Structure formats: structure tokens, C-alpha cells
Amino acid sequence: MTARIYSPAKSATQQGQAKTRFWFLEYEPERPREVEPLMGWTASGDMKQQLRLRFDTLDEAVSYCERNHIPYRIEPQSRPARRIMAYSDNFKSGRIGQWTH
Image 1: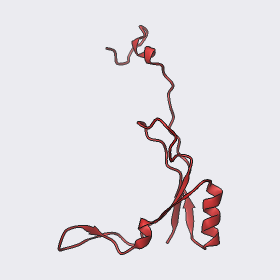
Image 2: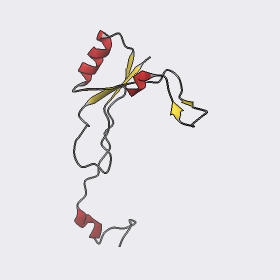
Image 3: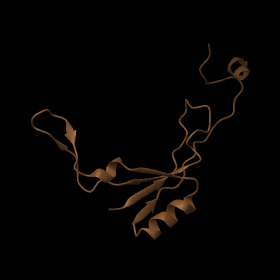
Image 4: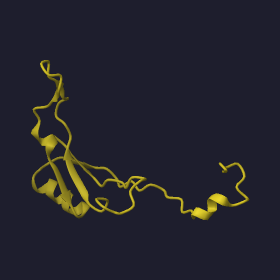
């Protein structure tokens, strides 16, 4: 079972830096989830899917996997491109081809 090491990106609606500086380790599922015939719930017998480890740095996460002989893959950090804009830019007279009020 391979592990996935990643750092979550900040969403567009989030203001702070909470949980974006940490690296997380999650296990990939061994088999797909099943639908129970009686209740219709989704079930899985894989307990490692519930495990999520948090590390301060990428090096700590990689060394943990190597110490415990866990195969892993690293997903690169994705930082969204931000366009810095002031609120007053919405009311400029030279806004050609953009939405206006």
C-alpha cells in the first residue's frame, strides 16, 4: 500500500494560512469501497484509509516512510496564482472589456 504525501493548497475563500504549512501523509485505498446491500451505506474494510498523519516538513514525512518501509509518492505543492487588486480598481474608468456596474 502506497502513501501519498502532500501539502493542501489554500482555498479561494480562506483568509489565513491555517493547515497550509503542514505536510500530510494518507494511505491510498487497497481496494474500492463497497455498497452494503442491507442499508445502502458505503463501507470499506481498509482501516488505513482512516489514518492521516501530519508533519511539519516534507523531510520528516519522507524519513517516516523510509524508516517504516512504506512506499510513498510526493505530490508537489500547488500554490494558486493570486492577482493583487484593490477594491477601487473595480470602479476605474478605463476598464474596457471587463464587467462593469
